[in-house]
Image (tube, rainbow, N blue to C red):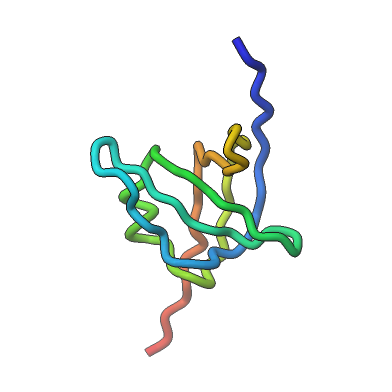
Amino acid sequence: MNNIDNYGLNGTLVNEPKLVRNDPPAIVFKVQYNEQVLNCFMTRHALNFLYEGHPGDKIALYGHINEHHQFVVQKALVQPRLELF
């Protein structure tokens, strides 16, 4: 079994998450992290993230890099935006 190094990162969502597969749901999106842009892939809780995530949101991610140089997200947290009326 391969030893996969998981790590956490904090960044900014660059684009709107895009649904790429329906069963099981999978999404792709880009995150700006330390002056670079990472391509991310997510299946766990993908529909929740699709609903919650918007460009410019601050997010925290936990996961690993796959062989396609995508950050595979295992856990995600979107910082709620303050809505002023």
